[in-house]
Amino acid sequence: MRSHTLLSLALIGTLSACTATAPNDNQASQLEQEHQIAEQILVSCERSKEQAEDHFDCESAQSGTIPITHPVEPVEVVVEVPEEIVEAAAEIEVKDLWHRVRSQLRFSFDDNKRIAAQRNWYLKHPNYMKRVALRAKPFLHLIIEKIEQQNVPMELALLPIVESAFDPFAYSHGRAAGMWQFIPSTGKRFGMKQTWWYDGRRDVLASTQGAIDYLNYLVKMFDGNWLHALAAYNSGEGRVQRAIRKNKKAGKPSDFWNLDLPKETRAYVPKLLALADILANSEEYSFDWPVIENIPLTEEVLVGTQIDLALAADMAGLTVKELHALNPGYNRWATDPHGPHHLLLPVDKVKNFLNELAKTDKSERLNWVRHKVKGGDSLLKLAKQYHTTTEIISQVNELKSNVIIAGEHLIIPVALKSLDSYSLSQEQRLVTTQSRKSGSYKLTHKVKSGDTFWDLSREYKVNLRQLAKWNGMAPTDTLRPGKELVIWVNDVKGQREDAVMRTLTYTVRSGDSLARIAGKFNVKVSDLRKWNQSKLKKYLQPGQKLKVFVDVTRT
Image (cartoon, rainbow, N blue to C red):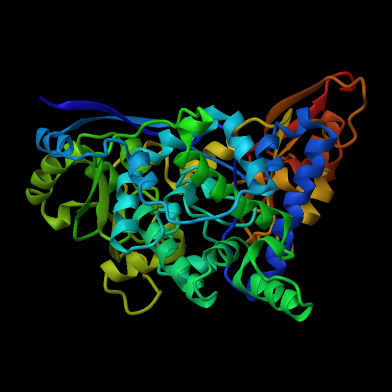
């Protein structure tokens, strides 16, 4: 007999609570901004919870951590667990993965008000834990195996609940990404490769190993003190070291509970301890901790070379979305040409996938086009056109320089399906995020040199954090010239209170100028430029489409 289980890759639902992992003093100013944001969120929630809830989970914020964004809707895959796995599982005494965690908890601690506050929050929000379990289900067995193999405290299996609610697509306002919430520099420092094609911070296996390595490094730094190590994982080792030195100098205790740390970090460690306490004493607390069977539902498969995710999905009998949900580290339509060359697949799909892979020549794992170089072409232009990189085009065609000559032919790898088929790729996630209606009117802004989120928020009179969120970014991110931002506003410049606004698309005619079009619709040339800056070039072209916001009571 075969066991049928629903593998739920619940990669969003609601905003949840997390923190940004930060490594050292080089990120001090960024960390300060992160904690300032946390304080501002709390102030917003206290002033008007109803309005703030449109953007943040106030209850999670009030529990002491920074809300994160879950940009992806839940994805579900039905897994038919092979009979041999079911039979092997029947011999195992522990049937529930959470009980497997429970039986190996190590930390001993005295209860206190800070732990009790976090425990009470979890006990009052059982649905939160249900969402967590749905996200954890495909990955938890793999994570527990890694923790057991490397002999670190099993409490670490609960840390992704605090960090991201087990969401590998989660990102925070502090540029932290993935289930374990690494910022870019810390991710690279602990082995998480980050390229145009791939981000190891979202790769479940790579980031789990990175988190174990980082925490092992920290616990050695703090002489075996796990609470200090966990605090440093949250707010940076330099900050915790300074707090310890300060207390020792003042003759005060230097244990975690007596350190002067940011409010978020002071709640972070109690959150983990509260979870461990609830799990260890769930009967006492009458808490229905969701069950996850102690059976491996996914398996890592090596593919050897770069492969189109659409082709891999077909081989495995999955949709592209299902495959991408299990492999969130891949940013684009294919795996990274330079590796890693692995995929995480449902256990019942592995055998068929390997059979299909063996029958497919390596040269057939990608789709190719033969492009005839035209005047004006460049490697950068072609990379953008075919959604690849200049490095790949140069490497495949063995180019000795970046110069390409009109009339020559280049071989270029391209996606097997249309890009919107890769709905969980970085590009398509951004399209979805920017398309989500957050105001009455949608404007676009093409970033110029020197632009910052702060300046643009003032120029367009919008909230700084909302502006970053609309574009899938953090407020502290650097804006690159040429990037197009989406800005949602509820009124346009100069709009009267009694205005009746309509959005029109005007087709440029021969002889038109911005002044003529502005006069036609009774708007300012400067506003017309602002509404269409991403489309405007030196000269207007007949047939060009322009967006115009018109007060129909004044035209």
